[in-house]
Length: 449
Ligand SMILES: Cc1cc2nc3c(=O)[nH]c(=O)nc-3n(C[C@H](O)[C@H](O)[C@H](O)COP(=O)(O)OP(=O)(O)OC[C@H]3O[C@@H](n4cnc5c(N)ncnc54)[C@H](O)[C@@H]3O)c2cc1C
Image (tube, rainbow, N blue to C red; front, side):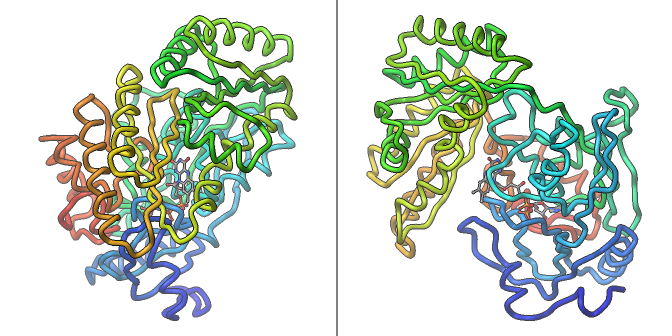
């Protein structure tokens, strides 16, 4: 079905496809295939389905919850060679892409047309992986997550049938919304072989501000007031004091070590952005901020926000000999300060290094734990903290994962989060993949099909 140079059973290749960026236990597949077309994939899936061979799609392997780990072995479909931008329909604000396109590469190709694809996970993720995990990032407060930026998909189902779902129209009321069923399904319902993504215009100007607050509550209040005032930031990030301490060590920003908001605006002109920054300053001062550091224009924006974008690497660099785990929960904005307070209390009780940073604008909280590599006792404590914080998020009306997906790590919370509707999710899985060959062992605790 594929030429010999596009299938491998070599040990190093299998090992490379046995783990993502999480701490979840690696599991090697039997073979890795680099498909080149939807029709090849259809043939492979038909073959695998008849023989009950598990098939797991693979983007860049940058997931954080074990999402692409082939826990049942079988075949891995690595999309790195299906990475063509097929068509840019600039006037329709759309691009047709193969799933292996790295979103940053797409944005490089779009730059000279004055367009970009907004979702921005920190890693070099593929569009296919982003669709499967419904990834997002700092810009989702303004532009939404991947789900909000996908119009059409071509998907090969477990039996080898190809379906085309969605339309080129930017809105539709036509029948069940299958596109959004597949977004976030982590490759368990079908394999995406082509996607039409929504594009937006690159704004003319940018601004940023770093604002220090005496407490996490006052920072949370500022987040609410900024959104309520319709100021429409394109990033609204809250960093806890220990993150600022690390940033101060690496960057010459001289920030006060306190709860700090990093925010970014974009818009048509510097004058308009200056006005928005003035209004933001007023709001922040009203809720009692300690310091407001604004920056107008791209250069200033980059200077102020670079440290935020590099935070994950800065944290990891600061803890040699440690492994990393990033918790990802999301709660309603009103519950946000309480969620952060709970995370801070957990950290205080255990003394294990933990860095709280979050996409505050959409209530999405990350806590990066740095546990000693191989110290299973310490990691058991971290897992317990993870469990308590996820359950707290659920009690407060939130979700076990805002953007990293369920994968292996969040499966055990699915019943608590979804109750009876989890049974309907399983029925959907069985409908699309009756033999349970597609990315088995993900989303649900038991292998479903
Ligand atoms: C440093 C760092 C920072 C990160 N920051 C963020 C962040 O800010 N926001 C965020 O959301 N995530 C973040 N992530 C997590 C990760 O980048 C995202 O989850 C991303 O969407 C994974 O894309 P990938 O191409 O690596 O996919 P993989 O990890 O290879 O796969 C992810 C899932 O997609 C499935 N899949 C892949 N291709 C297809 C396809 N064609 N059809 C069907 N299913 C498919 C896989 O089976 C798997 O279930 C970060 C990760 C790292 C390491």
